Every structure is written in structure tokens, then in C-alpha cells.
Length: 461
Picture (cartoon, rainbow, N blue to C red):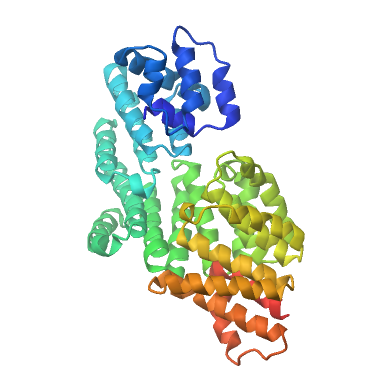
């Protein structure tokens, strides 16, 4: 599939309409229209489009290349490589980021000054670090970083250590989420020790900042060490202030929101909410570009019982995403969160509408964890709304599902929730709750799981 077709397949209807209105020459318009028409049609290949328009392979490829550049410029709002990288990452097309790097590198090396070349490699390096773990290329990221250092005028030890720390920030995350951290951990510790030795007692504030972020990712994604995670993030923010505007504000926002999430997972919910409130007041425009942040803000608001605040955040920043013609896992999470929001307020008609939408997703299209969490909320809905007959029938189906995956550790971790639902149903029918019910519920009163534990509490109020 051509890069043009991949890009067009990720565009919204308004974006495609905008592209159709652009003045194009020769066969470009016909190729664009035909590619838009079939961009999501698995039964129509690129060769089919080429043959239909009676174009030679070389000419068809050339038109695709020209159109890719034009469409990118239109969608990104400029012809800059910075905006092109951002567009491709936003559309989750990692291969196009790497393709853009190759194309732009040739251009910049041909006509750019040394400062322009260094800037290009720095921007490319930062964007390569944003590529999802499944497509991340550590060798390419490090090579690009080295090219930046090589071309930077008056490159200092501080510059080099900042880049080395940045690489470890990314590696700590990538290795943890891909399950490779246990093997990489000795190398990580060794590299961090080397960086620490070189920056100790030196005013290399940028390097100190990223060094602390690397440890933060290690504690967050690998050890789940809440005290050390919070300490690393607070220390990082201290160095950010000392750096005096030499670190991009984006990194400060990253550290602040990571601290808010840390407080949530550490069950310090009021602190988490306060940080999110302040962050959105200061950096709302930046934070709302990534739906993850308003989603987490809404979840923390719900946990704190601030339902009106959660609804405003979701309606203003997430509701419009549900109108997408190509719903994805993000939409699935938003539907589930809306359902929980309204269940907490006993607005069951509204909650059911969002549950219905979430249930339309194919099980193969969502993660196992997402599937389990939806089953928990769906089953809890019938108990909370008083439909115990349906609650029992749903519970029976869920236990059957759980037994089919009894060897999966994740499934075992959440099975207790369904067991408590069974006990609550019996309680609502006149039986007593087990003496150890509060003990069973304890894990769902901690961290983000409190979002689901609060539903159980409401069932027995």
C-alpha cells in the first residue's frame, strides 16, 4: 500500500473533503479521488487504481510521491518537517516518520547550514522517541542523536549527557512495556550510574532533568515504586526551573501530568485532582491535544466525587471524538468512562446508552484488560440499577469467560471483582455479606481501581 493511501485511510471526512477542494494538475486529481475512494477497500489494490487510470507504474509512483507531499502540507498546515513529523505521529504512521526522515535528511544535507542540519537531527530525534513501542527503532534513534551531537556547534559535555539521559528515558519506557526490562535492567543501571557520576555537582540542569525522568519511567512502568516515582518527578521539576527556559515546556507538562497520574496510582486522589486542575488552567490548549490527559483528569474527578467537573471535561474535550467514522480503542475507553460517570449519579438511562456503544466493539479489537473492565462495569450496571435477574445472567456468562482464561494472570487478578458482585447480589436478596468483604474490596479502593471499587461501595450503601 502506498504511503499516500495509508495517510488518506487515517484522515477524517472533513480532512478528505478539504483535500478534494485543492487545485491539482494533470492526473493528480484523478489519482487522489480514486485513492480516497478506495483507501479503506481491501479488495482494491494500488495496482488496480493504476490500471484503471491507465498509468505506467513509474508515473503512478511519481504522482503518489507528489500527492503525498501536497497532502501532508495541506493537513499539517505547512511544509516544515516539524509539522510533517507531528502529523504522521498523530495519524499513528510510524513508517512515514522514518520515510520523512530519509527524504528530509537528503534535502537538508544538500543545502542546509550546519546549524540547520543540527536542528533537523534534534527534531528528528525527539520525534523518533515518540514512536509507539511496537515500532520504536532504538538504533535509528541513537544514530540520529549522534548526528545531532556531531553537527552541533560547540557541543559540550552537558549537551552529550542530556542526549544520553533522553535515550534512557525512552528505553526505560520501551523496555518496560515490551517486557524486556528484566534483561535490560543491568545495562540501564550501569548507564544511569555513569551519567550520574558525570553530572554530579555540575550545573548541567537539562541533563539532571532528563536523568530524573529516566528513573521516573523505571519506577512507573517497571517497579511501581510510588515514593521514588514521586521523588524523581519532583526533583526533575526542580531542575526544570533551574534550567531557566532552556528545556521545552512540553517536558514540564509531561512531568506534571505524570506526577498527577503517580498520585492517583498512589491513592493520593485529592493531590492528583489539584495537579490536574492547575495543569489544565495553565496548559489546557496543549493538554487537550492528547485525549489521554482529559480522560485521566475526568477519571480522577470521578474518583473524587466531582461528577459535574468530570462531565464538563469530557463533554468539552472527548465527546467530539465519539463522532469518528472509524472508532478505535480510545473511543472504547471514553464510552466506558461515561458509563461509570453516570452510574455513579444513578443516571442509568444515560449510562446504558454509553454501555451499548462500548459493547458494539469486537472483542478482538480491544485489549484483554479493556474487555475485562467493560465486563465489570456492564455487570455492575445491572446490580446498581436493581435488575438482579439480568445481573445474574450476565455474571454467569462472565464466569464462563473467566474460566476459559483461567491461566492468564491478568484474568485472575480481576476475578475477585466478579466474586464480590455475586456476594452483593446475594446481599441484595437478603443474605449477609461475608465477614471478609471489606478485605476483599481493599484492592479496589486503591489507585485507579477505586474507579471500579466505588461502584461496589454504592451497591451496598
